[in-house]
Amino acid sequence: MITITGKTIAEKIFSAHSGTDARAGDIVIADVDFVMGQDGTSPLAIRALENMGVDSVFDPSKVAVVMDHSSPSPIEGVSALHTMMREFGKKTGVTVYDIGEGVCHQIIPERGHVVPGDLMVGCDSHTCTYGAVNVFSTGVGSTDGAAAMAAGKLWFKVPDTMKVTYTGALNPGVFSKDLILYLAGKIGVDGATYMALEFHGPVIDALSVEARMTISNMAIEVGAKSGLMVADEKTIEWFKGRGEKTPDPQSPDADAVYADSIEIDASQIGPQIAKPHAVDNVSPIEEVEGTPIAQGVLGTCTNGRLEDFAIAAQILEGRKVHPDVRFIVAPSSRQVYLDAIEAGYIQTLTRAGAAVVTPGCGPCVGTHNGVPSDGENVISTANRNFKGRMGNSNAFIYLGSPATVAASVIEAKITDPRKYFE
Amino acid sequence: MEFQAKAFKYGDDINTDYIISGKHKFKSADMEAMAVHAMEDLDSEYYNKVKPNGGFLVAGKNFGMGSSREQAPLVLIHSNTKAIIAKSFARIFFRNAINTGLPVIECDTDLIDDGDELFVDLESGVVRDLTKDIEIPFPPLPPVMAQLLADGGLVEHFKKHGGFSI
Image (cartoon, rainbow over all chains, first blue to last red; front, side, top):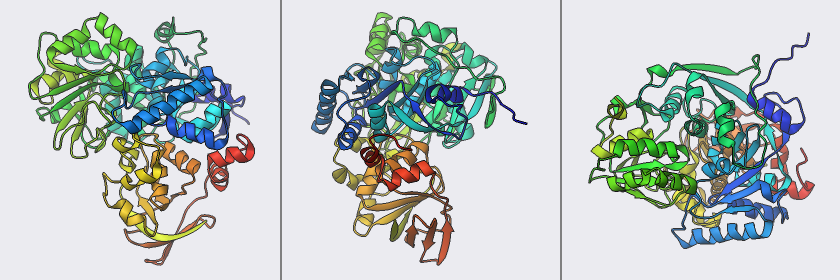
């Protein structure tokens, strides 16, 4: 007897894009709806295209290159690579997002380059961010990116899926960042390698689209290929006015087969901290409270959105950043920057003592905008705390929510933000 | 493809930031120059140890986790690393290694020590530890990846076939 079972979100999106009955484990060649590269990866993709003998892309309206990791250029080597990207844009007609536009992972969904049900690849591991809006998006290397730019398709292994359900409700002062850090601590940095994650449950339903992106953004930190969520009314609403493309949302079937399932009661979770030098080295904040910090970072593709600025501004309104702390703030896009000015958040943070830098990746990747000194501790809203990540292998990076970072920069030590939400 | 060289052994969860730090990788597309920084946050002598006579980078689980930077396999190739031998690999690195022509071998590495002399024949599916006189079997690559590696990487595959032919 043949039993035909239902499909996961990943299996549905791969079926629709490969013209096959795609099941976990299958190798498929699938059409991609969009291809993206950033300034650390596009130059190698451009060179790979040259080496392939390809001088155009499959569809210039479906390709973008973004200058966000070292932007504006801090050094002549980067300037040359940025020039290479601009010239590639002129030659092929692909969209070029130059300095000041923001982080690729904010721009791509914000400008409607992808919509629910799409399949896309990006030459950046945090491309998994758009899983939050029901896009199967995954990070690839520059050569895979080049092949996708040339052919409009790429080969994939259809992944197994791990279902993560958050039950209960978030407590005051606890945010989506804490949910994903908790998961990383629970399953480890290779807990979902080669798998897609699907996030479900009332806690996810209650989150804003922005807060959901924080969770999907960090799917790669547990090794996952994608961090998918269903598109609900909030998702569809979020895409209104963001372009011409029609969403084709994909939901899992009730009898979809999952390789693994985890249920987490969010009511039991407080603020979480990932300690140096691993993202799964996670503790409840109580265990690290009081650790001195010299620098705080608000921003990045994980937590640089308007809602994150609202939370930080709420805490810092009428307060001051501690004189022993540098507080670096990077909006994730020009639009977020403008909206944060409009809402008064930038003024509040600047009055409190923040240094606001160009929309983009900020100091996350260690190229500019605030490299820590030897022996210093940093508290950051970013997604990685590897040794040397911020440009100094003798510094120590702690990861937390925007509320935790804002509370901590006031006192120059890791501080539980819940006292501001009582 | 056959190689004989020394093993240089590291631990679990080696991320691509450790293989090539962001502070270097954004500056240039010259991999030969950048290769001197390969693995430097974990072992500042890696390049000097491996470059003269070649070597195998041996590691534990989840090698190449994190960033998608293709500079990671490229600087290892340019530092004269012949292959990566690890218990398991992170997904993006695994693809990037095959695409750029760096052999990746998944097998139990517990018995291999730093400094052991290894002989690897990719076709035979065995790592021979000549120092310890043991053989460690490894599974073949998935057919699609074996084909890409045999063609010399994805760029060469595209040139040869005018697109995907898998």
